[in-house]
Image 1 (cartoon, rainbow, N blue to C red):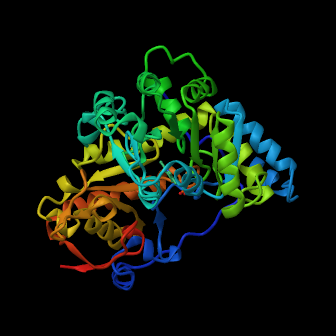
Image 2 (image 1 turned 45 degrees about the horizontal axis):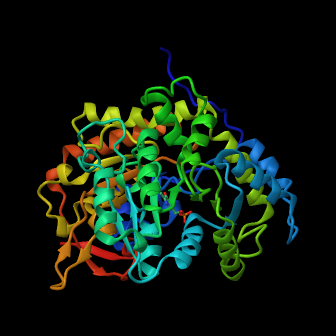
Length: 456
Ligand SMILES: *Cc1c(COP(=O)(O)O)cnc(C)c1O
């Protein structure tokens, strides 16, 4: 087989900025060892997130020019609505300015004290919105999903046995919704199988609990189903996507992921009464029902991006480019989450830095080292992001200590990725020199965005 190439050519470029290692040491210190606090112009290769960082296509830019900025009934809204509906099959489509705005609305309505939301793994903003409402989020990830280096085809799957037990323990009446996150962002960008979605649906039906999908990476998940699940090799990606959504009562989505948009999101659902309640909140917090916190031009970009993302040449290149980096690291002995996920490479920081205890945040230490060594920005997905304190104020660590290198869509070329591999391998070869970090300042929710740290 020949090299799988970028299925696009480049019409417009933007510069990236070079710094020296000495400069980066100083920048890190000024940023309090938190990659979110580093100025973007001080970053060479930015793998902080794949969210809102995609390169839009010439078609999307053309759509931007055609945006209809009418307050009510904008033609851009109807294009957006039709695009979302063609994929999800859901009648009620509600635009929001991001995924978390959709979450805020739905959990304000369905959450509250004494309620439980069960998921394969809740993403951090999803969990935060659930907890902010007074409810509790519970993850029921399959066992293989918790073992970073054990390969399996669908490590994002729900543990359906545990789901059933949790429903029995908490009482179906206290569970307003089960949520499947595809792909599982916090668990390595690992996919969920169609069979698992069906099985989860069957359990939800038994207990009369609605099933929602956190659909941020639905196309990447659909591609994995096509590649790995029996019976789907000859089905088209749009067909697979429609089948996924056919099992759900609704979904939330961040258009900053698999819609190639720089901003945007939506809620979609089948229940009219719930949709009306969501729209009432939307008008208070986001805007009128036909723009929901977005400009008409954003709705155009999303409508077009949602269709482009299902192109099979694109998905083949996308998934292969993550696998390419993962395999280079595996060959060099670097501990990474296996198999490769859909949007990011996850380093296993616990195995990478066994000398740094979890309460000194080995993941964050590795994030800082990658920046210092090569100007690469990554993010910790471990105890800085998910750690809690017990009553004695002792850290309750996260299940895994991961470092995520999220790859923006259609942005970097193969030589950028080769450079990233070289930097990671350099850091790996001098890993015994790295030390831990302590937190000096933090907020109660989503502390990783703003926390300040310093070397031990
Ligand atoms: C990004 C993301 C969200 C939140 O979307 P925003 O647009 O960033 O608010 C929710 N769930 C998952 C799985 C995500 O990756």
